[in-house]
Image (cartoon, rainbow over the protein chains, first blue to last red):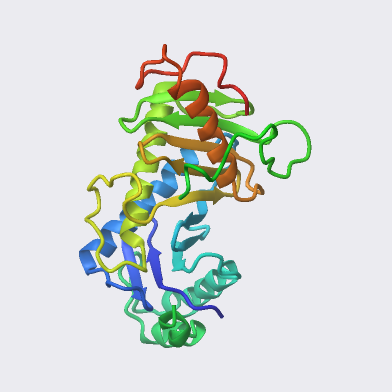
Length: 141
Length: 161
């Protein structure tokens, strides 16, 4: 799979439940990542209000000058979004894979409380395997 | 971004690939204070809010998304704080976002004029089109001696999309 800069998972009320940084310059501290997550949650909802056509389900892709942001919203309202380099392909597939890992290792964990921050070891291990971070390629830019 | 010397007004604008009829749903132009200078719609079956609220919501969304993009920029080490207004051109800015029902393309000029085009989601990159519209704005609005900056555009000369 491709290399990404960071991954965020937000619960249905907009609170950040998982954040992992894979190599952006200037790491965000916890407070900033919480703010960014809630901001994204609100923007996602507002974008549905501004749609000229019925049936909008929110922002799926945000393209900026130096990065792209892909977002996947599950049917229950949980949002998964990744920040990656511009023009990276197959992010939708990666998000689906992460969603599957979430359902397998987080939701099926009997000790996990819904909507709470994710602290599941198996999820972390499998996630790291799924996201093969290509450090050399990123640093080489 | 090259605003001068890069793009001249050509007789035919670079057309995004389209099937038939109008490709765009709506266009908005805002100035840096949030005044909506122009709003045109060609195809908008769904109106969620009244026009005033709609303009304010659109401006607010763009302001916050710009702030978010500047903060989330993974390639710069020093980012401003969320919510601090950014100067045009400062920090990383987004140029489009896509949902399942529409695609919004955005361009901000150095003077703070924001151009927004809402089209169908399959449209390709519209930055050249927005630059063309900006050139039209410069020629017919900014250079119009009877136009007061900061007021809505009322002439018939700008409707060339």
